[in-house]
Length: 231
Image 1: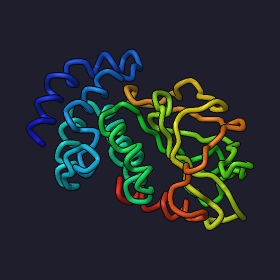
Image 2: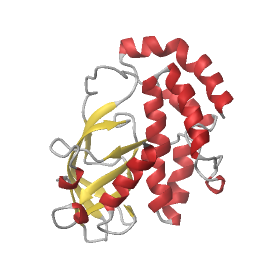
Image 3: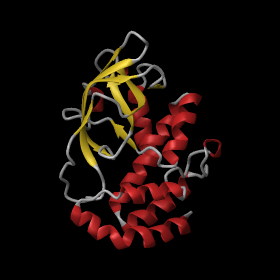
Image 4: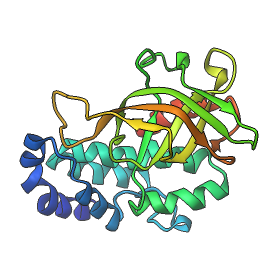
């Protein structure tokens, strides 16, 4: 895995990294090729179509990509960890079989939407709401900030308030891009210009029945566990 990642980094990433960063270009085609060779689902179990390797293998591969371009490595980290890991650990079998093969193959690009304009480090105070709909789905309203991969994503793990204030009133959802989602222009950063970072706004975005990850009210637990794994 390490050798595979090194070969890809030296041939497909390093020669272009300076240009991507100078142009503030997110190399989506290169990210999809990382999926083609198995680097976007390193720890995804074989039963869902990928290698099913361990975290050490993933870290060795990540080091090689990051040495060539940190922004590409950030996209790889979001796809492998922040987007896929909560589905694997907390999703239903139906959710796993639906989303994990697509994420590992980069048929869908994932993002993790937790931070908000007034709830960054204090994620327990987030204000985005998911209100129950008549058909057992939810309706999402609010905003998220500093979302890595957000400008190129078509799959999102989103954390929203479904209950009372505080951490126990937060739930997690896995969903695709839908009407009611607005994506900002890329946010200016000091570096990693080859990585997408945006603000998301939800205006009555519909979450179908079966979108919730885990149980109602366990979103904060899922959020912190996912961050621990990724870090």
